Length: 551
Image (cartoon, rainbow, N blue to C red; front, side):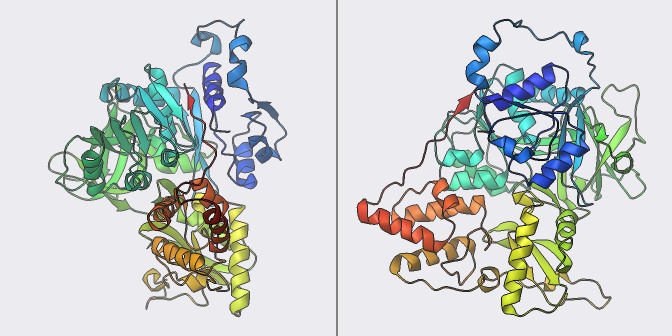
């Protein structure tokens, strides 16, 4: 598979030979991958025979790494066991290490260009904060497209630890992994807590990517063997982590994002980039050795978001000539910690994924039948989800509306990664407005089952009735018909874990996540279950074991 030992070897080979790597997730739509290939002007792509299918429009060189881990022994017999001398590669600390593409408000992703010195500064901070026991076996669960992966790969590999490479953090639900540190998002850790799937070997849990609630920290410390929980904050533009706060005992005060990591500075500034008094709410600007080079091939956007540092101190080796303008509202607390209060603009984080709502709206309005579109976040089934509202070009009857929504969802799914496709898409005839003519987002209708699933088909037997009840509990909407697709009515991978849990409680069956991914309607799930229950005692549906790849 793509997340394999060969993937890690490929990343290290690129860096050691003096190159910079650009991660391309083969699960992304082909058009988005093509944009990144073109924007970064890539000439060589490391891939494998499965992932290669996503490179249909690429005319550069493709090097397939199938079986590389097995061949590595004799392939490397003639190679030196030491690294190439840095001087031979012509490298300096200011050379590019990697480019990570993040959601862009213009409708196109933007590449954040990180230099070697940026990553090294983060690694030195991590070395001082995390002890050997914590980093001895780190779960490498985050896609290379997101910068949590930088911590997961390079912290253990730089300081004598081991990476345990898995498809994602939810792999812990299906198989036990002997790991000492988990680095993921709060929504994933909540799913693991619900299933008691955090291994007893885990000593440290890093949580980042979305706001962390105090009860989650307290539950980890009370219910697992984990001895340290960190809340980490940081945009890709400041190299993975910018601030942090650690907890080893019950938290009784409101959550903060802590203090800046080593070699960094945080400035809370007003509208004219003036320093605000402690306690005042302002925008967070980040400075120091983690500040990225900028956005690749986007000088205007770089100049807008990476400003000259009015407080630059050339006498201070960790002071930077530029500051990154985060767009986040914060304030200093009396104890020196920073409280995170929200975004200034329309950027959101859903399950740790950074999303510009404007990019999703832009893609929706590209569809010929869409007059206008609005995307917001709403709490659905106990978690924040993207909900899209689309106004058609012409008036439609009920049947036409269903076709319209389905066609637009299919089209946007071919343009955007899964995490950016609204979980729920609803057609709207007229936008609700407030007196001044602006959109009244609060008056947009709440999602309901009938609007999301097309024609309602009622359950026909007791198994289907039980599954309908189970789905409605998990998704928080009703009624749900037996032909509704789980992912079309607001489902996602985290809600699948709740569904798995409900199967265990209601049917006494351990259902693998793979089963739920493959069979996405109640009708199909019921027919498979019926056959299974006729031939087996309620216990476990078997699935192929995931392969643990270790370094």
